[in-house]
Image (tube, rainbow, N blue to C red; front, side):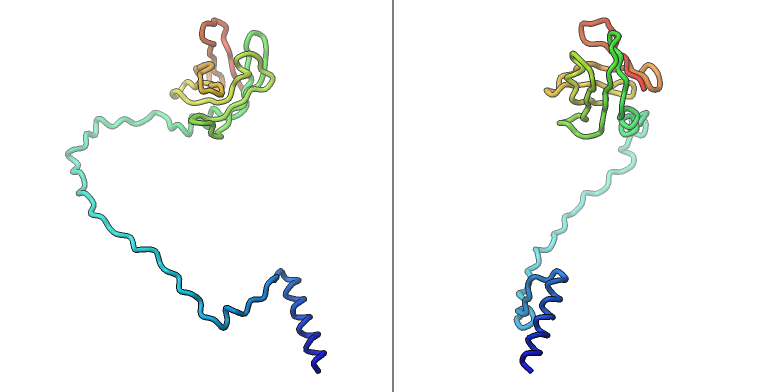
Length: 162
């Protein structure tokens, strides 16, 4: 009779272990669980009275012409770069790099190879920066999917397009 109990107990344990149970703890059944202390309650503060509408100058409110998120979405992605009869690629992403967004250049040489980040200046222009945060070049919009700019001290144009 004791032999059957031993076999049944072993089958029960084998079933538990095969289903992911690795520890059997019956202590929680027989002992009282400790009470969990609640955090202190939140205290309320008195709010200042609302500002009367007469104090608002409705003519002074400026509405931005375009949302920065919409501008960013128009700039991110792959661009074809043309500079001094050499073509390369530039990829601009929305991944943060310090206070800017990450960018990289493929098969580019010279100053463009040091591209690490980019940021929006205004609705029609953005700048490329190196790892130390210095501006490499500023691009100005020339068409819907085209920008151009030049390096400081150079007259040759850098054109990017899709």
